[in-house]
Image 1 (tube, rainbow, N blue to C red):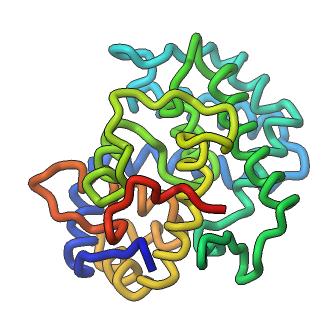
Image 2: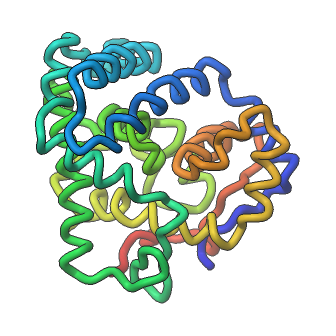
Length: 265
């Protein structure tokens, strides 16, 4: 098991509770609408409008349009892309996959305990990078980095952590070497290193969630945010964000630390 939770349940609870309450609230608000959006065969206009408004609001509060972060497009443009069939199909596909159903074993990827066939992996990666690129282009103005499209995917689907600077630092500190770059350009696909990191990490974290269930569940249950029991992608996002601060303990580790932790099938 290369990825493990090294902290005790009380440390997990403390990290979750010390994570900014406004960030918890923002995720909860958008995710509630996102569940309805991804569950629909075709999203209703009122759900799309509600999601567009909530998503823009939270992304703005999370830094979009500030400093060097990309500007958000208008509400109608955001609604239009969320209404589009290709966008909805990609996000719905990710929303139906819980991180807890993913696993990695001997350098192979598994879903619900079954080895994922090459064509299934191709579809998964197409949906993941398709969603990131569609959202990157149509939610933001002149976006080039992975950070904010990943935040949007996290808010809507809860699928996996978003590679903002804090999460990347938390990954680096936990032994996922090669994540300490000043910016993370959005990869086209998973053929090169940065794309592999995005596509492989969910399977490693899914394995960790299964192997360290007791610690994680106990920590979440002891926190103020028990609803995160059903949001493993967000839990890891929070823990990695918090462990970027060297005053906090390292809770999620890749052991032994590896430069090529992502370089497998």
